Amino acid sequence: MNTPSDIPFWQRPLDQLNDDEWERLCDGCGRCCLLKLEDEESGEVFYTRIACAQLDLDTCRCRAYVQRSQVEPECLTITRDNLPILDYLPTTCAYRLRSHGLPLPPWHPLISGSPQRMRDSGISACTYALPADAVSDPEEWEDHIIDMS
Ligand code: SF4
Ligand code: SF4
Image (cartoon, rainbow, N blue to C red; front, top):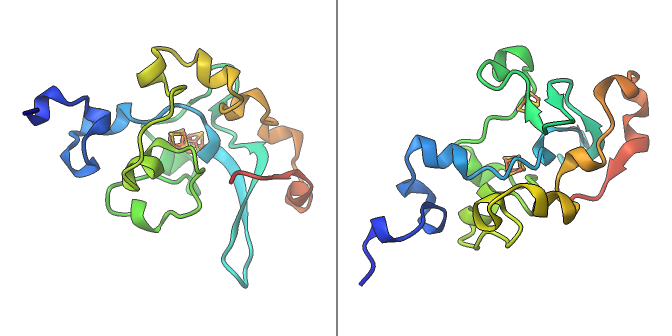
C-alpha cells in the first residue's frame, strides 16, 4: 500500500502540501497575471490578453513576487482558503485542477520536466500577451478580451 510519502506531492490533496510544495504546484503559465474585467451586474470575469505590468514576458515570472500584494493591489494571491471561490481561474490552472481532484496535464512542468512543452502547447500566456504599456487606456481593454475557458 502506498504511503503519503510514496505519492508525488502534486497527486496529494492540496491540504496535505507544505508551503514549498504549494508554490511548486504553479505551472508558471502566467495566465492568472493577465488583466481582467468584471461585469458589474453579473460578476462575470473576463480575461484580456494584456499582462500585468509586473509580468516579465521573457521569463513569464513576476518581477515583484515577494512584494506583489503591495506593488499590485489587484494581484490575486491564491491560498487554500480562497481557492474554492476563485471560479474564474483558468481551467488549466494547476490549483484549480487539483482542487477538483483532477490530474495535472502532461505539459505541466512537474510532469514533462521543463516549461517547454507548456509553451509549445500554447498554454503560457507569455507566448501571446501584450505588455501592459501597450494598452494604456482601460477603455480599450474590452477590445482585448480572450476566451480562457
Ligand atoms: S503582481 Fe506578479 S503575480 Fe501578481 S498579477 Fe502581477 S505579475 Fe502576476
Ligand atoms: S494560472 Fe494557476 S498555474 Fe498558471 S501561473 Fe496562475 S496560479 Fe500558476
